[in-house]
Image (cartoon, rainbow, N blue to C red):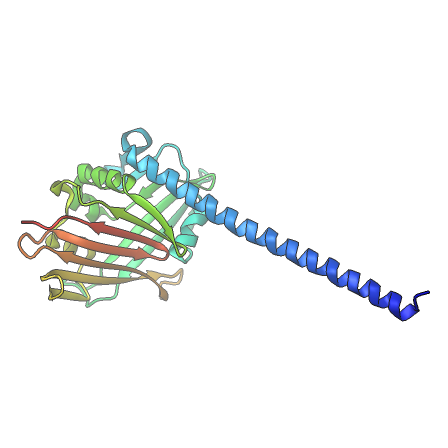
Length: 260
């Protein structure tokens, strides 16, 4: 007959095994939830990209060429916070029940000729927690025009969407028409003065680098939340050859063929 001590040891052993199983089950559940969330986010971004590719069917340019309206919203409000790495500068609840999220990015380079730093403001409108409209800076509409905005959106829609190290990267192919390739002057007009601009000896071309910081709700800059852009231009034509823009986990890579 087993002693009381042996019986207690057996019970403790069973409890430890049961506890380990529960912990293991919890681990699998948490892992499953994380994978599901990542998969759902990637799926929504993929659907969004496909809508941009079929621009005429799913997207309308409004507000004098300064906004895109999405006819079948697929992106959640939380997706943008996850990808940008920060909450928006401001959130407004409209009488219609919609939410308006504003992101204000300020250029940290030298103050421009106007006496104030360049600020890029992006406004996102959400209906039932889904992105239904995106408003970009007026200067973008002035410089590019509706036709080029639509062409650029379609180009992004037809590009590859890569999920790598929790980063999402859009890569544009080199077969894009030259009519949508921006010049150094165009980039400078949109982004303002660069932190670094000059001749790039490695690419034997021109380059311009930018860094913007996100404004917080109190107007202060959030130092660890930045939007960066690095551009290289063809030395003969001053047209964009290679560009990388990063906002949080979002990365847009643009490559165009070298002029001959």
